[in-house]
Length: 553
Image (cartoon, helix red, strand yellow):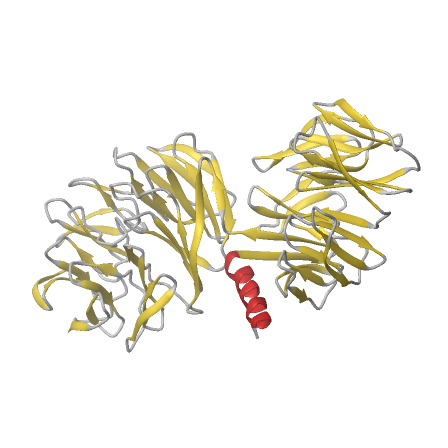
């Protein structure tokens, strides 16, 4: 029973904290599901993207962006060899470094190139040989590097060297002739389909008969054939033989900070309403009207409304505000109790605004309501079929954009702005983005405009991405951008360099709460710690983590 629980824990840990991609003879799999057909030479993980290696190119498996390179061989740490040409992958491009001598079994470790040249093991630093190793007897036919250990396979034995300082190798020990070797804290030797794990004292700790002649590792887990063996010797058998694999961890390093996965929840719900979050707690509305409160990755309450919810959720002093297509506004307290509901004149496609005192809601028939404590204080006509708003300025003026693309200020029709996703305010006057775009502000009132795949700061282009931008957040240190291709980008606000990007399947929205937790919203919901804080400004489409859409709250 303990063994079963241990295996289950390991399997769940792999599912929750990583995404495993396998290369097989017939394609690429994510866990046990095939995601790409074809025959590939290898797969690799570069700049937080997964690339399939073809005979004459490497291809991003999600965006299908292709980079041409003749007969590429991936040798680690972003380096490729192509007909004695050494390339380095940086910022989405392959750059030629130099032409080097012909090498067999090339590897890179700490930017030093290792390989076999004219029967000797050589190490090249900046194109120059810094040391070479000749066999004591027999012939060297293969080398392998894992976790700072160099394995030299000869016709007489297997020699292991410590290359933590790659310019000064240190001999460790010898083993009998082997087919393959890796190091993950144990010395792991494969010979005649028998896999053996030895400790530093050469004591045999674990062994298993396997069905392959090559060891694959991410530095910790071991795969041979269709067996995956963890460092704790738990074995998983897959229905296919594995050629290569990538274990994409959600412990993300960028600059001097770490981003870590806090939790992950699979709601398996369609979501068209932007959620809200406060103090690490997330509130989510599914399109079908189901409302969820999620704390520490657990659903602590839920409530089902009678009809569709598409408008963003809003947090006010009392709890959660939800607008619904059944013509009602609902007020829940923070524990999920329904405090009141009020019927308006027609469907409510858009969410509510709150300025600290008054709730503002606009109906599809173009009636703008002011509500307090479940009672209507005032209402007036604006344009029908509103596409954006309400938004509340410093003085309490209320803005919406109607279905024809005109701005309304209170009950007065103003100018044409087209199909804009939001307005942003620092004080009184709205910042208006171009059509089909949205605008955010930082604490210094710099304008960040997100149009198609481009990001502008104060009308100056600072970055173009490969895909259209779907959502964004301005932090104190970083800009967080979600694209239509389900990819999250983290951008350093000092130099606009992309310091992290990753694929989050079926993702639609970003939410950053008041303590710096970043939530990526889709059928799967991820909570990440960022070591960042949101900017004290209009930093999200609906102003902040509360979706207040108001300068004053």
